[in-house]
Amino acid sequence: MLRQALDAFVREDAELALQVCHQDDAVDQLADQVLRELLTFMMEDPHTISRAVRLTFVSKYIERVADHATNIAEVVIYIKDGVNVRRGYDASE
Image (cartoon, rainbow, N blue to C red):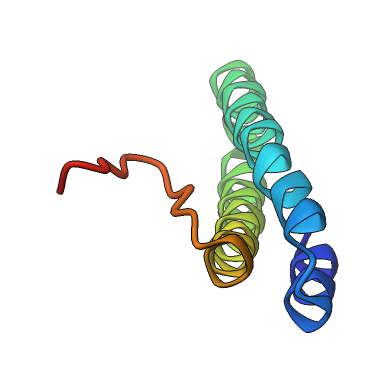
């Protein structure tokens, strides 16, 4: 996603940027799934807690990279098309 977002920025490719934006939800869902599975492992075997916590952090960091890539992609779309596609954006504001 990050590579695609940077490519979209360099090429001013709003279509590629939009693809990046659509991928963000999938990454969020995967991060949630990882968290749920790691919590299950921790509850079943307390010896896994320290490793699972570290993996939880890694998962969160990857999700944040995807969020940053999405932010770059949203800026590309705004620069290229003048359309604000950010979540929570209200055109009346």
